[in-house]
Image (tube, rainbow, N blue to C red):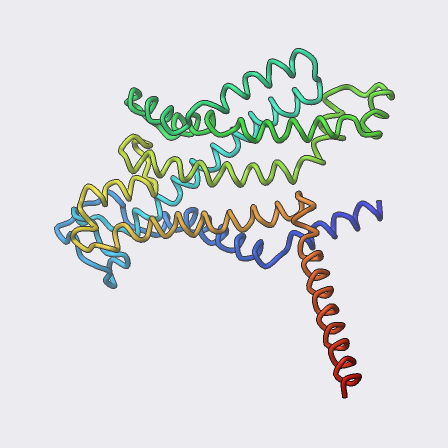
Length: 314
């Protein structure tokens, strides 16, 4: 138990890098804004005669062409985009774990069928498929768009989990559990799944980034979520309202900046997780330091040799 706790503490220390702290801080601030701000803003759909003016004391982020408050829209859009991202990430994580871990552990014909299905989904063009489905479906609710995004984003993570499961299932403690008569679902839950948590965490974060960017792209071209405000829908209406042409930066900059900040925060978190998963990334800083020390030592040796030669010549 002492070794296990010390190993967990060591892993936690490796995870708490400056990049992880900065990324987590950005994600937490944006998440809190999306959860709390909608309770303190006005109706985002309320139309007024005071349209297309910049930030003021009454409207902190200005108004749209029809007089709607941009801050209120940003608050509700943040909640909508985060909901899409979380739903897609959870669905993609479940699908990738089901087809990757289950198929990799059980093997045989089931693994072959799962691998074939995963490869078929993997080669499907994601964005064109989403555009086609979104164009033919009129009632594009939040759940439907989330399902479409999840279907096109789980296959790559499933292949990674399958390869990791194939490696883990042949280890001694898994073989011992099999010999002891443990059931397959318990071996997967107790022996295999904990070892895959870092990989699954990285896949979850990556799916979250992909989902938010995918939804923003669909909404920007007019086939996104209907009835729920998102960052992409804000950019869509800003484009239709010619905000860029009219110089109304307060309309399109906030949602674009939120997408960039959240993507930056999630990417920093993902890089930190990769530093734990990938041993090459974990040992790279040490190798760089060793190379620098060797170069310095070589330079010192050359300087000493040149000094000795000068003394001999003198």
